[in-house]
Amino acid sequence: MFLRAVPTWETEALWQVHITLKQAQGGEPDAAGLGELLQEAGEYCNPPQAAADILGRLNRVLAVLLLDIPAVRTLATALVLNTPQDTHVQTAYEQIHAAWATAGIH
Image 1 (spheres, helix red, strand yellow):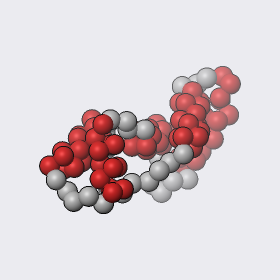
Image 2 (image 1 turned 45 degrees about the horizontal axis):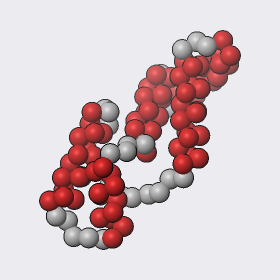
Image 3 (image 1 turned 60 degrees about the vertical axis):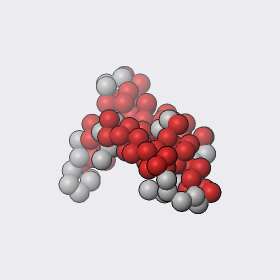
């Protein structure tokens, strides 16, 4: 695991892309062309991917980037300060992995 600061505007932009792609997948009339583009993009993947699979992976990326629980702050502080691992740090690490597992991230 590593710590990386991501500017808020980048995660907000990625979230907006996710919302727009979900609308396209859902058949929103204003996003029909985007839905077709998403489907075509999936066909060019190796192996080919369904639009739902692409959106699922994007959703998991957002779950990692936007996870805001106390354990994240505990682990981030330990990483920044380069503190030795203790039970608090190990517990935080386990809580983060548990939250990711709940979100379907392995």
